Image (tube, rainbow, N blue to C red; front, side):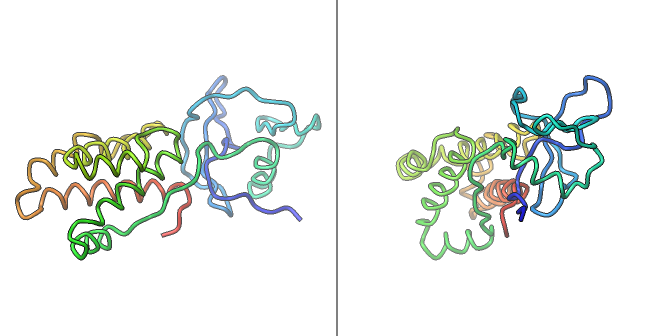
Length: 207
C-alpha cells in the first residue's frame, strides 16, 4: 500500500509551459498540492530513476502520461529521489503565550525562546548561529539578539526567493522603543515571532 509523503516542499509536478522556463518547488500539504510555489534553492541534475515531470514522465525508463492525478504523483516524487529541500520543521509558538511566559518568569523565558528558535532554524537550514551561541549571547549580550533573530527569520524567506517580512533592522523597534513601557519590545516580538510562525506553517507545522 502506497503511503502519502509528509508535508513539505517538492519539485513542482506542474512545471511552466513556456520553453526553457525554470522549474521550481510546490508545497505538498500531505493530501494535495497547494498553490504555494517557490524557486529551487539549487538546481540539481536529474539522476537515473528519479521522476521527471514534463510532457511525459520517465520513471525507470518507462514513459508515463503527464496528466496523472496530482495525488498519485506525490508518492512517486517522494519514492524516487525527490525529498524536501530543508531539514526538520520548527514549532509554532503562540505570540501571546510567549509574552505571558516572559512576564511570569520575569524575562527568563526569553532565553528559552532564543535557544529553541535559533536551534530549530539552524537544524532546518544548516545556517545561522544555532541555539547554544544564541543562549550565550542572550545572557551576556542581549541587546544583539533582536537584530540577529529578525535577520535569521527573514533569511528563511529569502532562501525561498520570497520577500523578507522582517530583517535585522526590525530589531531597532526593541533598541529604540524597548524602554517605553516595553512597546518597542512587544512590536518587535509580535512581528518577528509572527513571521517565524507563518514560515513554519508554510512548511507544514501544526498550530
